[in-house]
Image (cartoon, rainbow, N blue to C red; front, side, top):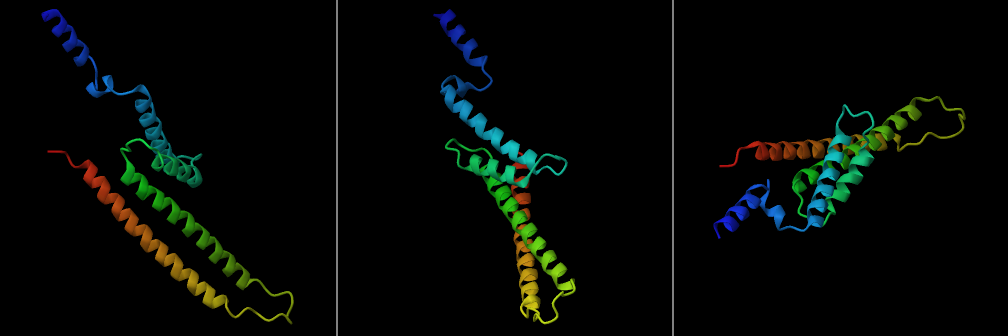
Length: 156
């Protein structure tokens, strides 16, 4: 009887995570796959990663958040997804603004063609939209910093 108890104690203490003895292997691999999606997205967002793209990061984050397993970094992934979307929208708006400015400074080839009157209004709307997106990005960054501080705080 003592030997059986000792053997059971040795088997249980030999595991790093005691609950992995009782979980299905498919659940462990699903969590691992989901975690790897999150970290792949983080790697794609790293500014030092020359091969990383926002589209790849967004795809990984969407897949991670749609995963049916318990997510360890759900809040962070949600904030990162929001930041990626805002960044993409901001880049599109800046490109459109630059294109509008470039077309406004180009000389007209046809002097009989009337100039579009909505160009200054459109530029003003774009500037307002860019400012709105920058404000939204700042809020998301503040939320991310709050989450980082909360995760960095030692648990009592």
